[in-house]
Length: 234
Image (cartoon, rainbow, N blue to C red; front, side):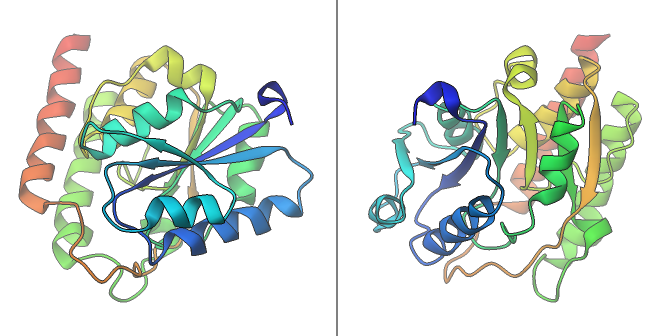
């Protein structure tokens, strides 16, 4: 298949996810095998010291090595290698069910520039999200984002989302850390992109180690980023 024939690029940022990465990739293959759509899977490996890269290759995914640390850095460098007209990004920890991508596809094909998952609308299963994130951090930061950028997005930080490559190139995000998630939505709003939300379910991840997210540090960075973009816009 020529790179120009690819319709969908699915990108998974990865740092030591050997336990769950293969599960995610196999679900993506299974989903697209029933659609007739052309696709590629890109794993943006952010310096894994386990067998994540080998797992990805053994499951027919392309691996991009990203030396600069950070969630945003992994995604930004990975997206540079995406060939699809549409991009779907999701976490590699099996906290989202990649068999349930139909609504993302439908909304993109309906003309939306960005399709956000909303975990609060779709359901957060027991143990999937810490109390502080579920009832304080995410609601506060999403409310702040809605207020500053005049949109109706209820979940600024869902790790499962989709957008057109054209939209991404226009908004041109620059963040290398976790605040990349907020930056995408804020910039899309500033550029008046057509954004919608769909419900997604969040499941407990399958990792045996602590998450990469640091609640207070990353929450503060999200807040500073939102205010900075608001002030620059005005």
